[in-house]
Amino acid sequence: MSESNGRSSGAVAQHSDRGDEVADIVVIGAGIAGLCAAGELAKTGRRVLVLEKSRGAGGRMATRRFGGAVCDHGAQFFTIRGRAFGGIVAAAHAAGMATTWCEGFSRAPTVADPLENTADGHARWRGSRGMTDLPKWIAGGLTAGTVRTGIRATAIGLAAGRVRIAAEDAACGPMSFSAGGVLVTSPVPQSLELFAAGGMTAGQGADAEALASLGSVDYDPCFALMLVLRSPSLVPPPGGIQFAAGPISWLADNQQKGISPVPALTAHAGGEWSRRRFDDPPDNVADELTDLVRPWIDGDPAGAVIERSLHRWKYATPTTILPAPLVAVSAAPPVVCCGDAFAGPKVEGAASSGMAAARWLTRTLGSS
Image 1 (cartoon, one colour):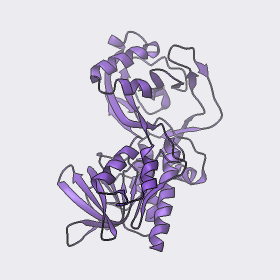
Image 2 (tube, rainbow, N blue to C red):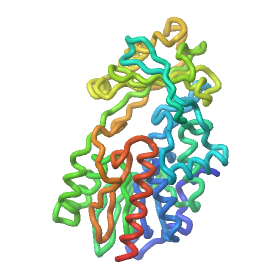
Image 3 (cartoon, rainbow, N blue to C red):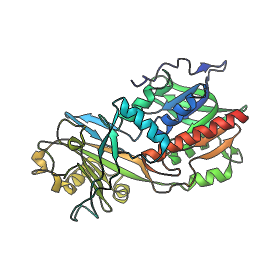
Image 4 (cartoon, one colour):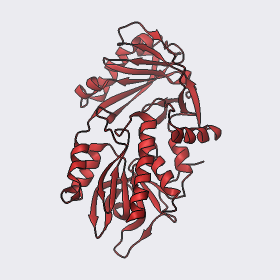
């Protein structure tokens, strides 16, 4: 299956007399939550449109290729505990787009402590060529034109019994959409900004309790440093180390993981460390992170590191997890928020939240 190119609206959207593109349901965000929601909604026969501000689908299930290496720099793996997400992964596995990595990683309290090799018998999965494989496979299974990339939503508001979304197309400029319902999967602070920009405030189309609940959610940022190495790393098999605290939270060998043809490391900085240095010069951040992971580089980094790349995630990890899988901001017309901050973090939590929100939206539209 291939990823949609994001430009053709096909049978998904039509144009009203006022110039809005019209869809039954608009999904904001083509990460795993939005794509699983779109897949669930597509089963109902409704016209679904997914708007993604980036150039491709996947969100934080991200893979970067540079210097001959392949590096996962967002989510590093996923697990399966529920039947619904398990069915999606099983189908992706059968299509050659997902595979198991291992059953546990090395662990240590901090980078300064000895490693403990652990395995719990529970499979950790990855995309066959990188973590982005799974979301791109899901996107490729949707009707052509469903996923529109390079379109950033700027406001969500209510008008005449429908939801109106203002947006900015990276290629064409301002545009707008009209929908019977909207499912929002962006990080919660960004979702609240969209509602405020569209005039959806407490008592003005939005449920006050829902907004208060969403306002309690916060995230840790994260720096992801990717290093292409001259020689294989010193990370022990199966190629991953989890640190409980300190400046580094995760270190992965992408070659041992099975996605990179050449030695390459991905290091994730801890949330507190990333927050303190979030606005520091990127080269300074990369230098310090390289020095922190030096024990797992074979040789002096000055000669052992061939190339490096730094990515900054502003909303990497939710520090508050809401107990429900979704929060309904409006019921008529329906506007619902979901994602990895709802009833379970990580990849499966986000996917399950998206599917739950899609089912709620279907029921609500059906009873309207």
